[in-house]
Amino acid sequence: MNKEQFDKIKNGKGFIAALDQSGGSTPKALADYGVAEDQYSNDDEMFTLVHEMRTRIVTSPSFNGDKILGAILFEQTMDREVEGKHTGDYLADKGIVPFLKVDKGLAEQQDGVQLMKPISDLDTLLSRANDHKIFGTKMRSNILEFNKEGIDQVVHQQFVIAKEIIAKDLVPIIEPEVNIHSEQKEEIEAYLAEAIKKELDQLDEDQYVMLKLSIPTKANQYNELINHPNVVRVVALSGGYSREDANKLLKSNDGLIASFSRALINDLNVDQSEEEFNQVLADTIDSIYDASVNKN
Image (cartoon, rainbow, N blue to C red; front, side):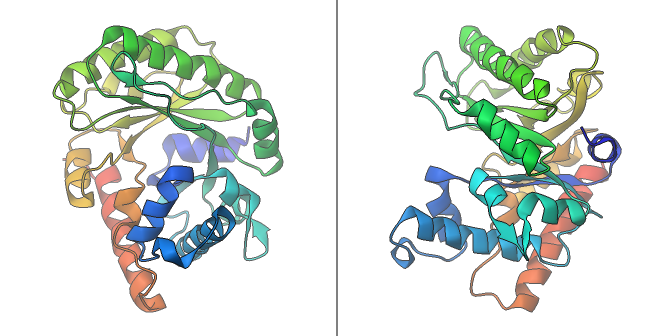
C-alpha cells in the first residue's frame, strides 16, 4: 500500500470523483453528455466514446489533486491510456489517488435488497489493479426496503469480499447504497450503521476499509463509522439528488465527503467549447469541494 496515498485519502481536504459508469449505465452517461445511441454501433465504439469523455474530464486543468483526492475508474478506463500513460498512472502523477470499480452489477431484488452478482475473476482483476498502480477498489450493493435480513446479507457479502481485496494490499470502498426514495430510509440507515459497525469491530487492526453511503436523512448518522479506527474515510454518493441538493445535505454531515458521479458530470456536454467545458467543470468541482470541506 502506498503510504503517501493512504495519508492523502485519510486526512486530505477534498472529495473523490466517481468516473466508473459501466455496462448498462454507459449509454445514459453518454446521452447526458450529448452523445446519442445512434453515434455508436457496438460496445467497443461506445467505450471509446466514454473514454474520450473521461479523458476530457481528467485532463481539464481543474481536475487536479488540489481539490480531488481520488477517482474511481471502470475496468475499461484502467486499461486505456490518457496522454500516453495508463489512466491510473496519469491520475497518480496529478496527485489523484486511483480506485477501481470491481463489482459486476446487481442481482435481482430479494428481501428488499440487491446483492452483488458473483465476481468470478476477482483475483485476476485485483492483480491487474496492482500492476496498474491502483490504490483501492469499489463495489456497490443496493438497499430498497427496511428488511433486516436483507441488509445483513448485503453487509456480510461486502465484508467477505472486502477481506479478499485487503489481502491483495488494496483498500476496498464498501458501497451499500440506500435508495433515496425508500419510505423507511432513516430506519434503514440506522440499522445499516449498526450492521456495518459489527463487521468493522471484527476486523484486524491492520485491515482498513472505506465506506460509500447515501447521504443520511438524519444528519451525522454515520459519525461512529467515520471515527472507527478501521475506516480510512467515509464518502457519500449523490444517489439521484441534484448537485445542489446533494451539496446542501452533505454540508450538514461532519466528516462526510463527496464521491459524486452524476452530480459531477451532469452539466458537461460534448458540444461545449474547451473554455466552457473547463469552466463548468471547475465550478462543479469548487461546489462539491466546498460541501465536502466547509460544514454548517
